[in-house]
Length: 85
Image (tube, rainbow, N blue to C red; front, side):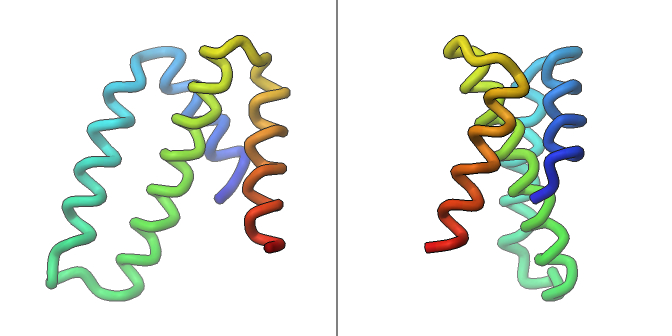
């Protein structure tokens, strides 16, 4: 999960719509269920999904009234906290 990529996806959501990101998530999850996917490809899909989900979560926090910087920092703190456990 990379903060610059999450910010970039968040910019896409601002410019277009979160529906595009939701549909991309659905497509990547569907692709990941294919038996033709190699482990390396699955790792890449997983990384993309984590960044897409992160951007959606940041957007949700902003919709609830948080500033972008605060939402990004709060999200990353939650992620880092869950990794440390």
